[in-house]
Length: 278
Image 1 (cartoon, rainbow, N blue to C red):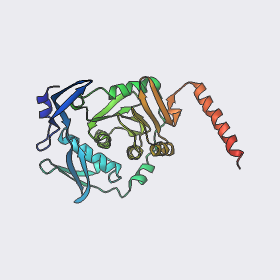
Image 2 (tube, one colour):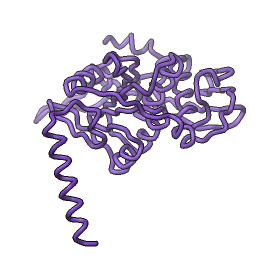
Image 3 (spheres, rainbow, N blue to C red):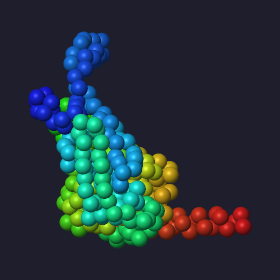
Image 4 (spheres, rainbow, N blue to C red):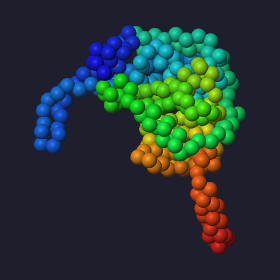
């Protein structure tokens, strides 16, 4: 991508990338060169006249900021749908977003409890295809290598609904969820595809939305695996080079019958081992 194109990808008061002089070392060869770095843009969200939170984000457009904030309000349990938002005012110069919304009266956990994850299925081939498509470099990634990429797929037909990027993976997830709310996408038949690690916070965002499948190129944390198991979410990590790790609820993945047979036998052995200590 041409540098001039990236320079034009900015809000009124927000740089997307910045030029820096670095020393590039390759083996024994060293030299000075210019490089492009992703910038973090401080942005503060206010809701109904109150401070909500501050982001360090990558704002590719005003619409991007609107969806980031809407996703954050939703995953915090402050709104239930896009229609709960009464008005939006994005102050680019001050780095502020002012939202007026109808309060849902429910916290995030209460709202999540009402959204049941869907009983969908996905093939191993589709898992790898979706990850490959999500990891196709964007122009911003090609120039800086400094953004996470997150997508939302419709498992009913295997098509990608939304793709977003941000220097922070949590922000990219909120952008995807906010865009899905705006476009009235169905979370209960969706898969969330991540280029980065699955933390407990990201798992909770997916749980609040009622997303049944999470796919990641990277690792989950122990806490996110426990939470996924409890929430009924299929969590798959380390999707790369033709392999993957299925951590929870494998019944949604089209696996050979013998794999489930092995699981049943292992559970029986575990039950016998535990009974010996009773």
